[in-house]
Length: 188
Image (cartoon, rainbow, N blue to C red; front, side, top):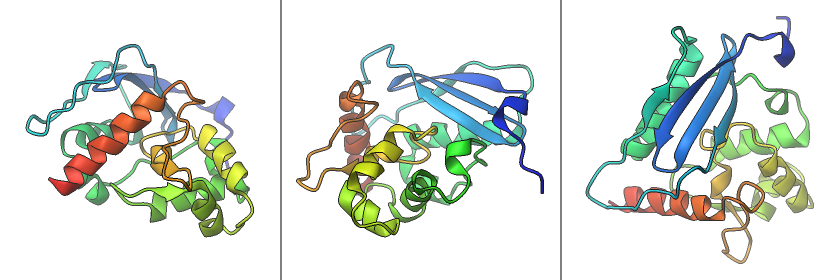
């Protein structure tokens, strides 16, 4: 099978309104390229009773099945997050997620082994990805994650139990919100 380069794709973007603010999902017929959290509003207040919503705000007339699958997964994550483990993930089509580089390996291990409501330290994820001395490289891999939420880099925390930076430190409040969201839904 021939690998297509990202630049050869015809990308489309769907915009969602979520409890975190606007989320833009970009991808092509081969899979999702990126998810961007725009941080245009403060995260929604958490309420244990009411489900949270994530609705399509702007969408091209035609979208690929992979983009649609991503939208459905994100909608479930916010309204019924405990169900996401049984939903199919969309295909990913981004160079950082292909090949055997450490970044790709760390992100794939995180996706496969760190479940909803769990956390893992940078050091432990480095060990799980096959290089126990690469905790700092795990941090770099998390910064380069093109599809946050789907690959849950918000679940990676420091060995001391502190949450650590998210979105290069600009989204620390979002990381706290996501961890609380998962913890409350898992316990409830």
